[in-house]
Length: 140
Image (tube, rainbow, N blue to C red; front, side, top):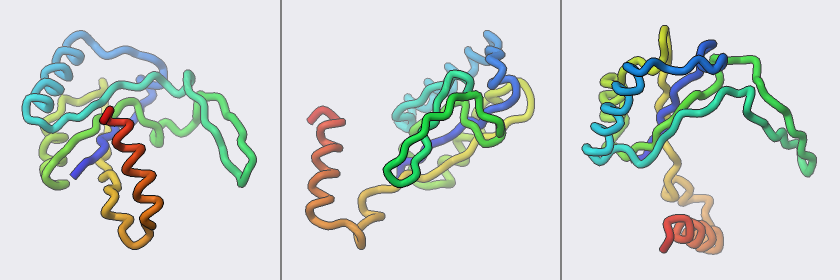
């Protein structure tokens, strides 16, 4: 199963306070373990929401909202994409993670929808489109 692992933002990450050299080394070693175990498919840290934009949708209308965004506890400061056996394996790997922030922090694990999750709703035409897009994205 694929999961996205979100590192939640903190007041420090939103203030662009950079991690220490020690933490960067610890996270690098942790990421290397994930890659060596065949777990990590991708991931990166994200700049604070002051560098972000949101696009709000209402029917055909689109409205752009500039950051920063107020609710720090709802923001993400980094992510990984992992391939794991199950949620228990993902939790076990997160528990091994160095604390990604200088103080209290949270990491959220969310399963990714697989095409099979849409079996009842997927028409053959929609499946063909999604398969074609996936193949193009993977460079096939």
